[in-house]
Amino acid sequence: MGWKETAEPVLTRMPAVQRPEGHVPFRRKLGWTAGILVLYFFLTNVTLFGLDVSTQSDLFGRFRSILAGAQGSILQLGIGPIVTASIVLQLLGGADLLGLDTNDPRDQILYQGLQKFLVVVMICLTGIPMVFAGSFLPPSQAVASALGITATGVQVLLFAQIFVGGVLILFMDEIVSKWGVGSGVGLFIIAGVSQQLVGGLFAWPSLGGAAGFIPTWIGILTGSQTLADGQLLTGPGIQALLFQPGQILALFTTVLIFGIVVYAESVRVEIPLSHARVKGARGRFPVKLIYASVLPMILVRALQANIQFLGRILFSQSPAGSSAITLFGTSMPWLGQYGSDGQPVGGFFYYFAPIQAPQDWLWFLAGTAAEPWQIFIRVAIDLTFMVIGGAIFAIFWVETTGMGPEATARQIQNSGMQIPGFRRNPQVIEKVMERYIPQVTVIGGALVGLLAVMANMLGTIGQVSGTGLLLTVSITYKLYEEIAEEQLMEMHPMMRNMFGR
Image 1 (cartoon, rainbow, N blue to C red):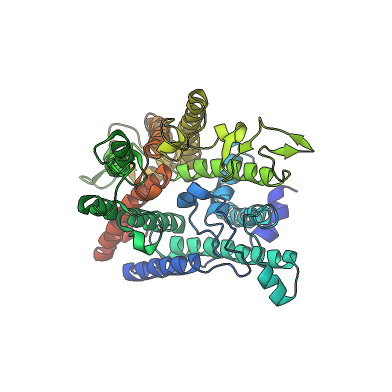
Image 2 (cartoon, rainbow, N blue to C red):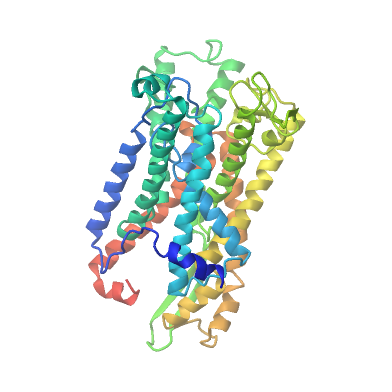
């Protein structure tokens, strides 16, 4: 008996959101999407009961823009477990260890059930160390005394809440995918990054926190705010204007990334198609430069986030006062050294920590204590990790989402279309697709990885990560295309029947 027969009773009984039986009107789709978005913002503002908010620190830090959620809220884990489960499934599927055929309805149900089961496992594997190890989510002694329980009892309450939050965001994503527009994961990323961008542009100092780009320049022009040594046209003043978070270079990078991604989305190779039976019916199959979309970047950055998460967990178990990871009573500075802010400053986990801002690699800026050769190695590793990782995960993404040459050829064949000048045969169409799709997938994945690193190195408005900004622009562009398509289908029901809607 194989693993499928053994796991089938469990995987087929995993709770699921029911698919709509018929066509869902566009306005209802928008209603479901808006409702889930409002619920998401509400849950990110629900503070965990029993949490000591005075001593907590965000374990994910700069990764928060792509993992969504909010520190100290019921959505503490964000979409992290969903993304990590997807990484595991991508790797297992890429190695052909699952033996699942996603074209088989039975295997589709098993695949979806396995994905949900892995998400629950990842919620536990991420949430348990976060609550019970270190001081990432410290329990409140006042709540423990008021309830008459120990600190461990409060920790159990904290874990129960973030477990519920992890399951909620899983089903919220499923509701948007089946009843709304786009995907829940993409929607939550857009929501979080947009919030940071708006804050980075318009945040006023009187509201607490750092001033945004516009209030800062209003203060400079009116003379109510100074930079560096108080003089604008000096070396320190110009340096502050250029490199301070949210200043000129950050605005330039943000606008540049917007422009590059929108342009890259429009660059495509169009393969002509014609209908085999209807004369004059022609079409084109577009192979975009970013064929696999920017979504595989979530997997690459989530893998980096999990590596850093492991380092912070190991360091939290080291003796008090130690600056290096200690395992089995032995100090291992080569594995990881950490500063007072909990960030790696040396060792393996330092070199594999992604560059997040100009201050991380420009040694003439304050806060960069590493030697230039160390910074160079870290930048080279981050760039290699993102470019190669982006290409690899893009290939996995294309193959597992039915976008590969074989699946695409089958879809074209089933739609009654063919490539003019070639026999109407799936194998022939597949060979034509193999001339474009694999190469474009690798180039697009590597390009996205390069853009993500460059955006982080130069900085962005609101200190949004480069990956988060890329994802937001790309997902918003695709969401716009999907909304336009839905409106077209709504106006012309015959087109919906033609495309199998």
